[in-house]
Length: 141
Length: 141
DNA sequence: ATGCCTGCAAAGCTTTTGCAGATGC
DNA sequence: GCATCTGCAAAAGCTTTGCAGGCAT
Image 1 (spheres, chains in turn yellow, red, cyan, purple):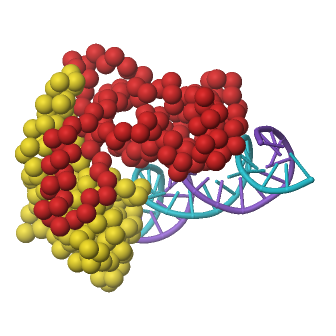
Image 2 (cartoon, rainbow over the protein chains, first blue to last red; image 1 turned 120 degrees about the vertical axis):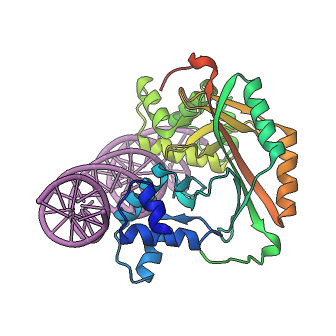
């Protein structure tokens, strides 16, 4: 089914693209940086260049397959775009990402922006936190 | 009075530091990148190196005089830290920054994080928007 | 006088780009 | 077969660091 999504995006179905999409599907618990994807591909015996990873991720972003986020720490991270908007809780210890959406917050945002005389385009809400009691369920990185 | 703040931070009172603090005070409507500060200093006949700007801003950040934000676009931007926490509305056209704080949103955030079993450390909420009807009051950059 | 600061240049990181060869369609 | 894609290497931004001289105290 990966093929179809890639094809729909107007891109040729190549091994790097299939692999990268696959990886993103497998890691929904933690958003991956380009470097992460690159290392995972190397571990998978797949021989893909870092430049290609960046190119593919950027293309996927343009195609709406993927969303790019700028969490703290310089590196961009990527997640599969499954349509619905949501915000993020990021664990500062393990990088685990939890998604949420809260209508109360969404509504307040719209109200605030309107009050100030702006037209809201998009927003980024990231809650930096620690997994409960230090025993992170996902403690890599 | 700049002198006092710098001294309180345990830093020597030097021209670059005074100038940079001064600039940050003058530009509260738009957060400045290190590059912005550098260019403004050059325009002010002050001859300060870019590396020094970065160093001073980082020192100010450690001292709690300044806050660093990662808005979209790779570059970090800096604002004077006047104590209270607040979130930001950033105009995508002109870079104008409006601050706000909303207790409803703050409270919801705490609730959500607790529900998910995390301990909130901090958060970043940025609303990207357009100034009303395209006639940005501040349309530099 | 001493130790902290500064400017310059060089290096570090993440990300992008140019190009020749490879591959999908 | 042709256009698109890939890997490599080089380059491009932003930021940090090493070092020798300069300045605040």
